[in-house]
Image 1 (cartoon, rainbow, N blue to C red):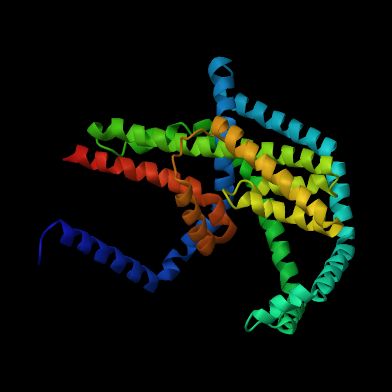
Image 2: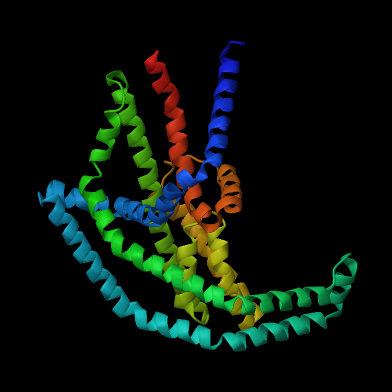
Length: 360
C-alpha cells in the first residue's frame, strides 16, 4: 500500500465516505438522534443567543455586586419580563392597530397593485420592451400566477395544519426555553473546563485560547448584530414617520428583524416599505429608498465599527459567498447562522494546527 502524507489523507477521506455510506444503510438507528436534534435545535440556538446577551449582566450582578448567581438570573428574568410588559403596553396597541389596518387594507392594496400592472401593460414602451424579450408571454405569466393561486387554495387545509403545528412548536420552545437558559447562565462557565479535561496537559493552554477566541467571536457577533439591528429599526421608524409613510411601526419592525441577516437583510426589509410607498405614489417609494440608504450609511460607517469592531475579520466577499451557499442549503436558517458558524470554524481551524504541533 502506498505511503506518504498525500496517500494518508486520501485513505482518511475514503474511510470517512465509507462510514457515511454505511450510516445511510442503517439510517433507522440514527432516526431518533435526528428527531432529538431537530427538536432541541431551536430552543438551544435561541437560548445561546440570550446567553450571550444576559451573561455580562450576570457577571456584573454575581461578580461585582456579590449576588448569588441563581438569584442574579432570577433578577434578570423578572427585569426582562417587566421591560417586555412595559414595551407591550407602550408599543403593542399602536403595533396592533397598524397591523390590523394593513391586513384590512390588503384587498385595496392588491387592487391598487393590479391597477398599476394594467396601466403598465398599456404603456407603449413596456409593450415594446416585452416584444424585444424572446420567449416572454404575459398571458403565460398570468396563467402561471392563477395556477399558483389555485394550488395555494387547494392546499389551504394542509397549510392550516402546518400553521397549527408551527404554533405548537413555538409554544413548546417558549415553555422549555427559560429552563435551558437558566442552566446555561448558571453553569455555562463549567463547559470550557470540561472540554479542557479531554486534552493533554501540554495542550491545555492552547485549548483554552481556542475556546476563548471562539467565545469572543460569537459574543461580539451576536451582541453587536442585535444592537445594530435595534438601532436600524428605530432610525427607520423615525424616517418613515418623517416622510409620512403608512404603517411605519410594522414596516420598521420588519426592517429591524431582517437586518440580522448580513448584507441582503436590510434590502429584504426595505421591500415591504417600497411596496407600500409605491402604492401611495412613486415619489413616496423613492423617499422610502432614500431613508433606508441614509440609515444604512450611518449604520455601516458609524454604528457597526463602534459596536462590532473588526473582531470577526471576515472579508465582505466571503460573507456574500457564505450567504449564497447557506441560503441554497438551509434557507432563512442558513442565512442567520452562516456568518457566526464560519467565524467559529475559522477560529477553530486557525488554531488546530498549533494543537497538532503540540502533540509532536
